[in-house]
Length: 334
Image (cartoon, rainbow, N blue to C red; front, top):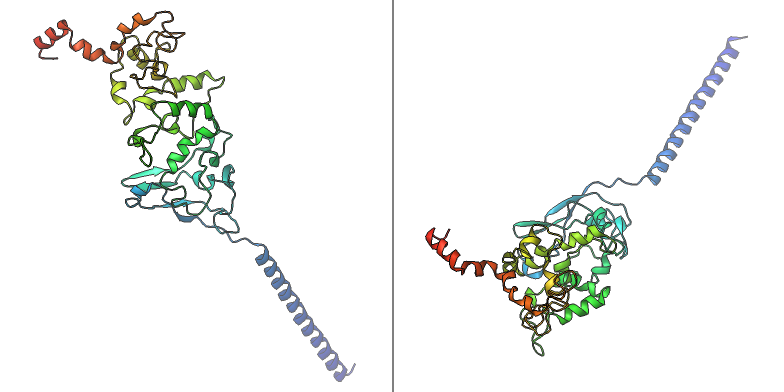
């Protein structure tokens, strides 16, 4: 083969190799670009831990003193961004109110206090109202972010009275009793309304025990006389002097047959003792709805009334006893 032919074939072979390298390079580049485009089109941008300002939901009178602290909470991907703000009420779990209220860090500053607005979902599932959604009691709430004053300054009162929608007879009884809020005239509200208890003040809120066919639940409620009746703002004085041996002292030490407040005074239709229809009225003591009730002193009659002053007045009566007065004076009142 002549040198000219060798040179020509070498040139052709080099050209072919060069073109092959270019083609391979372009192919790799195109494939890489397509792969990158595919990845970008299918990847969801990770949601970082968000810092959220907790909305103020306290009454207007306290709003000026309240600050809105920041709370760290895990975001939930949705079309609205980090939080699923487009859910529909009523609904349970992470699709509803518990998107926020299921967070243990959800707090609201009220003056110098930090109040938690966390709801323990597991505890709620064990309560008497486990099947009731949040909006079943918070009937004035439609979801907005943030809440602000969604329910107005009386949102707590509205929730505390919502029980009447499911317990109409108990509400009717309460409305006839001394605890009911009654206007004193046209355009004149009840001046004692702020001190009168609503359903939720006595029964609590989210974690009411189951009573039906549940002795443990009934025992739990039975032990709550101080929380229901004797706490500050209600009748702490009557709780303090409920100390007679057979009733108050026995109840406070856990005696199963000793009466809590409502055994004598009634439950929802509590009446002032001066009212002639009240079971604690002097004319009714010993009757079937008071001391003479089944399980108490059945058949005792009105003669039992002579002991009644001791139930809440034992300490005062004892102090006036001549023997006690003598020894009190002798030992300097000790």
